[in-house]
Image 1 (cartoon, rainbow, N blue to C red):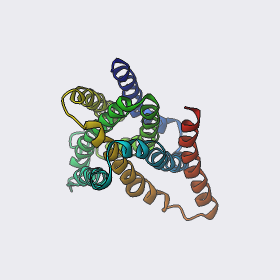
Image 2: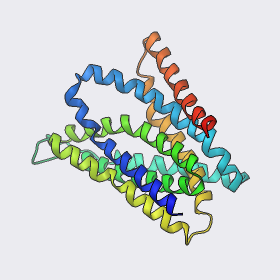
Image 3: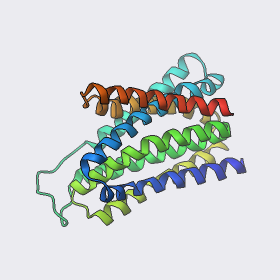
Length: 248
């Protein structure tokens, strides 16, 4: 149990540091950055789906079977849908300025904080199951956080935040993952079957992120060669998760 606390907290803190990836926008031109992110997204899709079906699903099937397993997976999809809806809940027609950041930027921060909190709970539950599952899930979260943080940083800048403030606010919302992990590890002692719920919930959440958020971005690229490379990167992400399983 002590090891689970240590591994979980170290993992979510490292993931929180990814929120500073927005600094890279200073180092690269936008067009080059877009190309890099595109292939990161592709690799992330493979990593998320690979983690779901190679690592998490076998563990979840040992704890939960039949109807409840399906319902827990569906709950992960529905909650992810609700969070995304909340992020896009409202917008403002007053011009953006330093004195008037748009509400959608604050909605994005709140939604991102909730999303990171759930990621933290998922990582905590994964390490409680086994180190290998926790490690694989941490990597899957990291993979989708990198392109997501680029997007979140862009949303905050578009919403009227200064670059320094946008980086700080992104980091603050990222730290909610630590709170989620602590909550998960504490509840484990008092709530029976928490891990049995959170593992299939994770599958639903990751499937939603990969299929609803990331894959549509890849479809925006119509160049055959680049599209083929996207496919190669998706397969590479899956193979990466398979390699982790083989190393265990």
